Length: 283
Ligand code: NAD
Image (cartoon, rainbow, N blue to C red; front, side, top):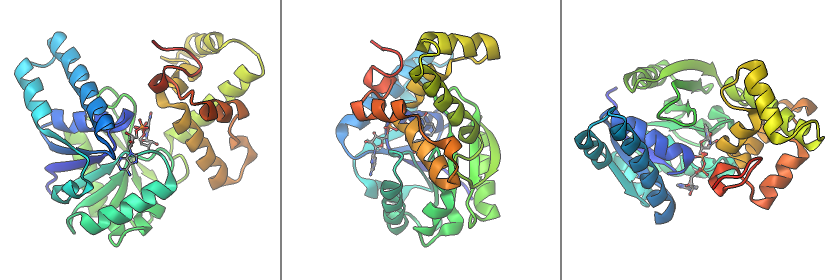
């Protein structure tokens, strides 16, 4: 199947990056969100990100303008009826995503593939909310999307080989490195990464070291490019919490219980970079 027009749901941290990655590669993108404000913020982010490429001579001003022109930002979900593929990157919430997949199934073209960028929710469950379960798949990008190479391509129990192959080809065509993963809570990367971040939150809350010291220790001791608490701020504390809850629920194993401080910080609205405050402060 030829995938030309791509719908992206959610213009947040991931959605605007996904829209940019597809538009840079020459795809027409329809970017949707529930309100104009997140769309404006998302498009501003894409503009800023492309402008940095122009300044570094990695993109011409004309190519930047053409890339931006390929993205249509709209609050209308119905606009996704024109898409060959829809990548859902809305807030990590099961009820919200189940509802979105049922609505998408009703409005998308019968041959369209429906993908989710979920960090942890079951693709099998999302597929079951549609009448096209074989055409539902996980396309899990990493943050920041324009920079990170990996895409976990997650096969639900119902995903067909044709759907998988179309997404694998597409991921490679936009310069990403797809890795095939069977549906399971947290998939591969978050199954390993999020418990490590969770343990860093426990260490911080127990006063083992400051947030900066914990981050420095893991950067210099394990050669990680960024410390676990700074990474949590980048991911979003709400997203990290949602992943831990899915792991905890999915495996019923106490080793995945979310750190109480993480829960409390999310309750306080300290969600990391996107709110200016997490384990570190941001201007
Ligand atoms: P975010 O909070 O930055 O953005 C979510 C966006 O979805 C918001 O703009 C919100 O207005 C919009 N939204 C909510 N309900 C909607 C609806 N019904 N229709 C359209 N838009 C809606 O979140 P994010 O970090 O971009 O995460 C989005 C998805 O990507 C989640 O499933 C998350 O698990 C996943 N993900 C996140 C990361 C990360 O590092 N943040 C990495 C990989 C995957």
